[in-house]
Structures are given as structure tokens and as C-alpha cells.
Image 1 (cartoon, one colour):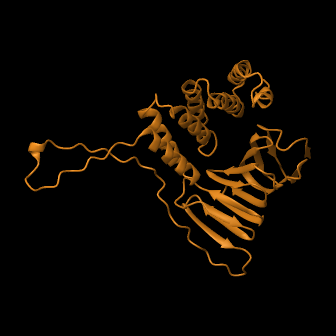
Image 2: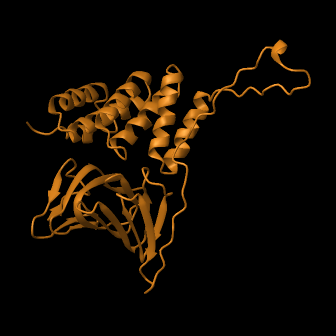
Length: 307
């Protein structure tokens, strides 16, 4: 099977029964689905693509294109790459996920686990048993590779609590008065969210962005926080209703900015992913009316599943 352009058939599902399936792309990339595999294409264009592995095994042989990003999601685990060859296997019976790299390198992100992000190079293998919340990485290039324990990280990004100074008359003589700690500002919450997102801590990032929206809804940064929150919920967190709410907030909070256009385009995309045809068409028409020559116009115009 050959796709006309790289990952052009977004929102489609590829599924195999007893036979395997190979999908070739004109940019030189290839997806190889093993038997009894289901793969859903979430997003796809010349700059980025994302697929979700529902079961089975897929080999991704990706051409290295400047600026192009590609992600495979499998039950809360994300594998991020630019150009490489790797395999992701999801065993739904044992609830195990395996990633092995044949060429190049990948970043494995598991926000729900107790491990940090893990970069795998060619010849390395990583697997988790989600039932036991354990992970291990082995070097398959060595005949008797040892299992290396991955370092644990704090999965939360907590705001610093505020403290109030007591009245001067309540303090004992000679006692050092308590130090006041300011509540986090909108800027610090945005910085926390961005840092957590870059570190692969999707839940921590979402908490920081949500805190900013709750505490500083009128701050100029609120629109960006809502947009980033929507992207997390649409992707890693797999929370479609939450993504819709976040993108709607981003549209409202970012009038006249590029964020508003991006958020409106993502609304169309998230409705298409969830199969909500009527809402998808309404959001699509709204975007095209507001941005007839917008940067997402061509892509948005192809959206919305047929009834």
C-alpha cells in the first residue's frame, strides 16, 4: 500500500488480521504492521505526525526530514522520533509494551510511570509491565545485557504554598518571624508547565497550566496555557472532552493572536478524531470563515468524517 503524501490519511485506522501490512510513503518512510495489529492515525502532515497503537506491533522506518516530528502512542507511553527505524509492540493480554531501536534513536516518555524519559539508541530495547508499574532497559547488542533500573522522578510540579505573616504582637520575644512566600505568579506557572512538558511529565504540566487558568484567567499568558493544555489532553493524556474545553478557552482568551487560529484548527482536529461530525463541520466552517487564507486552511478544509 502506498500513501500519496506522508501520513496524509489522518484520522484513519489501519488494521490487520492474519496477514501483515506495509505502508510506503513518497518521502521514503514506511510503516510495517504485524498480523493482528490496529494502528490509528491521529494527525499527519509534512511537519508532524502521530499514531496510536491499539494492539499488536508496528515497525516504523522513518525518513529523516528537517523539522519533522513523529510520535507513537501506546497506552500512555509515547515514543518520539525524527528519523529512525524502531519497533513498538503492545500486548493487550499481558499489558506489556516493548520498544526496540534498529537505527537512529528515540525518546520514550511515560508520564504515568515512576521512570524518567529514556533515550534509546540503536541496539537498545525498553519494556514495561504496566500491571506492576516497572520498567527496564537492556542493550540487545550484548549477549548477556544487564537490566538497568531507570531513575525515578517526581511526577508532580507543585506550586509553592503561600504563608501569611503573623501579627507582631503574637510573636514571642527573640523568635525569628516566619518568612512570607509568595504564591506562584502566572509567569512562574507557565514556566513550570513548559518545563514539565519538556521533561515528559504531561500530568504535571497539565496541573500547572490548569492552575494558571484558574488563578489568572485575565493574564495574557492564559490563552497560551489553555492551548498547551489542549494539546496535552488531545495527545498524551487522551482526554478528548478536556481537550475540547481547553481549545475553546484558548480561542476565547486569545482574540486577534496566532494562538486563536491554532486553537480553532485544533478544535476541528479533535472533533474529527472523536467522530463528532456536526461539531467538526461547524468548527471547520468557523475557522475557514475567520482565516480563509490561514496557515491551516488547506488541512482544516479536508477534515470532518463523512456521515
